[in-house]
Image (cartoon, rainbow, N blue to C red; front, side, top):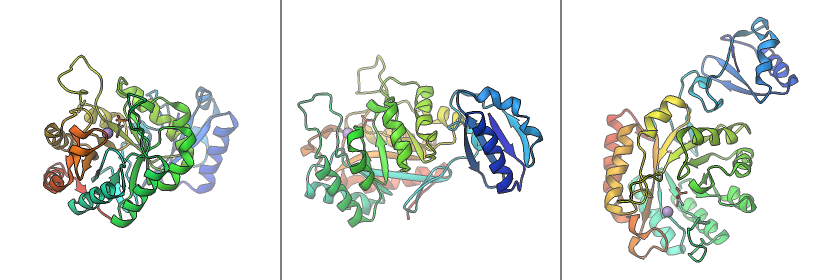
Length: 342
Ligand code: PEP
Ligand code: MN
């Protein structure tokens, strides 16, 4: 249920509603908009909110059910307003576009630094790099782990870019939280609910990737696990799903952009790299994502992609990335967005 407060409702009136909601065993999520404050009463006992008579409480305007199974993620909960997530001065959401770039994997100091310098010079707003890699084969390189985090952090500091990195396993959460400005939850972990709950509690912004065979609604339900812990900074990421089509690695589902925009206030990010699996197809997908109205893209860029340990075929050479970044910038402007730099 959603309790919409009157314009100018006081802190005491809001606290009173929160108390009543919590008394019946629901959790209360207060969302303060520019004009109105909304309180989401969430939980398995939600039906009992209707019996509280909150319509008559001081400061309350009206009480309405949230119609979708995802509650805090639903566009209705934010009264139609887009969420804007700010990471170190860079914004994603609303009119702000985020350009996240960097190598698939942190391989060594020279590779990480060279790639980071190039993407920063090209105008990226955040730096990506995986220290823990989810590989199909257990015999493939699994990432540098803590050493990878250290190198990523060094590259982030030198370039001034916030860093995005994947948390694969709950056992590494403290190490990842220490370094990451945004925690990536990979496609294979989209429904790892204990991991989602813990990143929710960490309070760090989260980039949640859509599972390989997950529906749009399942992605939204997964985001709810993070949001329910009081962490409002969640970005949803489409990265390609499994279909019957085998002419490329995955099917990049760009219809997820308008569909998610209608369903949720959360920013939508597209990963144009993993579905094509080859670099000449990455640019058209990146540009199409911007045109479709995505709030950001996360793209794999490497200083010497042919020698990359992981995902070599799809990584864009960093010395050509500036050209692509320029086109992204131009299309973003056409759809009314600005690449958000600090
Ligand atoms: C990645 O971003 O490098 C990655 C492993 O992504 P995904 O979880 O989408 O496969
Ligand atoms: Mn990759």
